[in-house]
Image 1 (cartoon, rainbow, N blue to C red):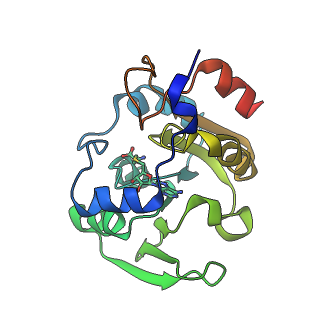
Image 2 (cartoon, protein in one colour):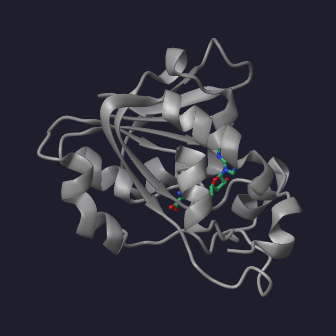
Length: 196
Ligand code: SAH
């Protein structure tokens, strides 16, 4: 459970933007994540028409998959390029509008509004802006957050959850002294203390 040299590592927002600009997006997967398929029942828990949140969404293809099942998907991502690629690659017409509460930020959404992607930092969001969610798909999100921001991230996520919501979290397990991350290694004991 020693996270070694990773705990002080910081990846700046500009660095993420640069990854998208240069196409250095090894984390993006063209096929839906097998763990979402496997645990879909846990996420949905027999419910339909859910509001599902994708923190640090990139252009995750699972957003389209869940929207096609009739759920309403909300994502947040700093890279506008990522979000535009998402709509274009799925042939989804979209429109853009500013987010009055966050200067310089915008919301890109399908014409029916069933997929709404906020282009800003997750730390700019609050439940008064995005509402609360019945489910969360956290893949490449907690593990991408800078280690020093983990508690802030998790505390925010908790404020965005409805009472009976479910949260699917994907982490990676490896020797943190051999790879600098992201994805960062988040030990299970830390996950327990972060979420309480
Ligand atoms: N969850 C996605 C992307 C994972 S990579 C997937 O499964 O494919 C992490 C993403 O978070 C990158 O696209 C990066 O641009 C974005 N990101 C990093 N910091 C962020 C922040 N503070 N707010 C919103 N997005 C952020």
